[in-house]
Length: 86
Image (cartoon, rainbow, N blue to C red; front, side, top):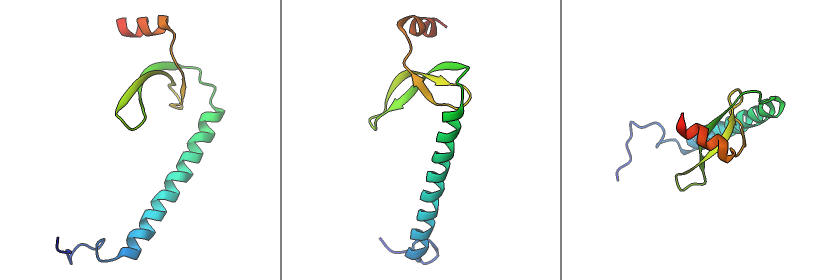
């Protein structure tokens, strides 16, 4: 494959590395901020949602806080039946 001279990213590998590192650092900072929010949340309102698990495109029904989106736990059989019938 020929390198495209008009593509600024492919012609500047150091810029790619710098941009990539900046994005990675921003993601880490946002994840840390989200963790703090989720830790301080009281999780007053919860819903059942299908949440992705692993990297094989599987999902699992979980209790999730409506405010902070933290996965709280697993629903009881009664909660699952109510969710299915709604």
